Length: 217
Image (cartoon, rainbow, N blue to C red):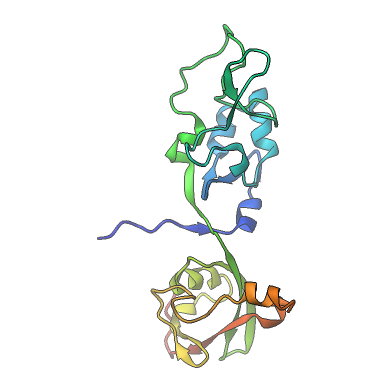
């Protein structure tokens, strides 16, 4: 059996997790749930920059090549130190020798895979999903990397029997194991932007045709 595929998330989905009791961030293309970290260190002043960044992308905190926090040379000491203009945060050592600095925390949180929950989509798309049986329409924001099955999962809150339908685009059945692009549903946003055409006026539509059963996922 092949390993489970990682979940993809839109920036909008990450942004909804923006409190100390539900704290997600993204950086370097990955999404992390830091809620357990916030719970463990509640009340610690070093948690403040992370709380303020809840729901946001923190890639600008990191060196893309090393995956570590960016560093710079301190002009006063000439020593290499972490660059934290937003304020020093958890697991970042102090600038100077300090007797109360505890290094016994294991991996720094940004290198701990236990916090990772999925992948941040590099490009999201807006779709119109039309149920031809009921004539109901739903607008979905999806990840361009997702298969049609994964898009179907996003649609389930609107129709628990979505798997009982044949999904089509321009009259042709979609391959549920493939992405929109692989199914020929081209992303034309860049072309529309160049032509100064409103992308929202040309949302791709997927049509659902009922198969006369009641499959429920």
